[in-house]
Length: 249
Image (cartoon, rainbow, N blue to C red; front, top):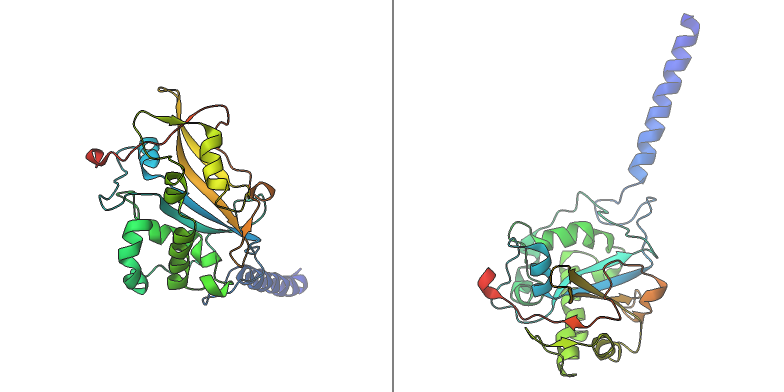
């Protein structure tokens, strides 16, 4: 029996070492390059949100800064077709706020932290930014957030709606086709995702997010070929565009 134990022990050790090596291959390296784990992405989703709808949906833990007056960035998300992936690609590449210190004035206006108990920048970098590293324009914290700000300036939902006389109102509701059309004509007639929060008590839907799909050169793509998202606005219902209620902060 003892003659078999030694070879068996050696085999088990070798198997364990092989498994560890494979596991190591499955994670991104410390410099953000992607290993064999399926952290590739096919396109990007640039998501903007309407803070008041987020506050209505989420509750008192949301605080809208008083310097914020329009649509804000939720994130730039490297994505795989029809999947919510990749995420959290490098757990050793920690968020460092000092790296984006020069961007803070813009971030506080256009990519603010809305949750009192959560740092949105930390979350977006850790979950999505680390996955964007293979793309030079998004490699590293500063590039990631600076690119998000540039996209926000280029695809300004606040202006798209306002130039079509769609502005925040406590009373007025807008036809779905008018809201959708105001955005579509500014994104080369490409399909995009428009999400709404539905208030069951009020029986109204409130526009909450707009998602644009981009290729790796930041050109627009047809979202309906890539995304299948929930909480879509009902096409048969009017859309509420509520003004900010800073008094709830």
